[in-house]
Image 1 (cartoon, rainbow, N blue to C red):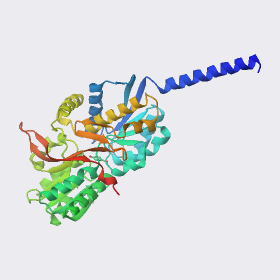
Image 2 (cartoon, rainbow, N blue to C red):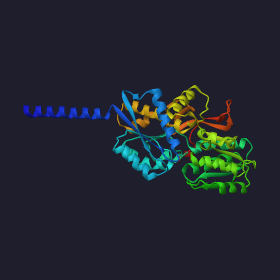
Image 3 (cartoon, helix red, strand yellow):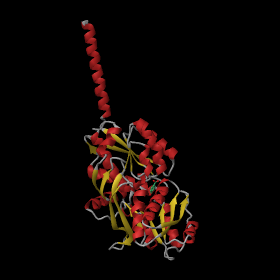
Image 4 (cartoon, rainbow, N blue to C red):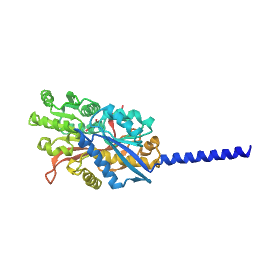
Length: 397
Ligand code: PHB
């Protein structure tokens, strides 16, 4: 070999090493961007603001720096269930903003529009809310820190039967989480000897509930079970139940906790009094971790009375994302990031939680709660029974 050739080889080797170092340096960028998609405007804006409050509470308590990298949050507004817009926003975050992680997503149809992008983009998605069981099957790069409606409705069905109500009408929004809730509640009450007299599915954009209430009354049931996505429709639905006289007629009202989020309780007042709900998080949950969370998230929101469950999904979601950043030392490796959080367990403001290694969905305590006044006269979701270590029954075959 000529000396000339050897020195050229050496120079080439040095150039390759330099390039590789440069690439590694770029991958370990000082700033790691996290795109958070949520409804920050429109009728569901309070839910998006709760996402932001949860994210900010996490960063205020833990700092913005993880393993020497600074987290930068990029919020993108998706006001309603709009799969096309969801996909476009996620694409923009990935391609233009170069986010390494995606989080947020309030509505199920939006989550399902984003998951097909993840593998090619090498980006994990941590879902802070969307609650249909099957989302987890749509990509191996999805992790969820919220709940599913199967998870919340199953123990509620059991508790409803134990409290002596046997014959029900179910009324749910006609899309993923509603259908899951209907199926889970029906399965739980039938297993305990109850029955569903009628199952009503309501179009997602309905705000006129009096005809539904007439059907509930006509079915001659002792109890109503309902699910609607939390926001203006849930407030309208609970009011309509009262206004139609169903409460006065002695019909018992059971629902997932989406219908009694704390920010709605002052407006509902007596109309919701005594409602029994199944859910993963109450702002009044009695623990030191929750008190610290409520203080930090309430401060971020500017008004603690507006705090409700989307904030806790976001807060715990940020913990998961921080762990992913740490486990990959800031490099973009979505599969490794997701693998690192399988089995991760911690104490959330809601109670003890764990990312189930099989489903990548959160295992948690589901509480039976009653809408009641606390000692100071404030309406709360009072936890009255606990169902610990609930996985997502919705994916069971
Ligand atoms: C959903 O679309 O999955 C969803 C939205 C709001 C909720 C629950 C589920 O309160």
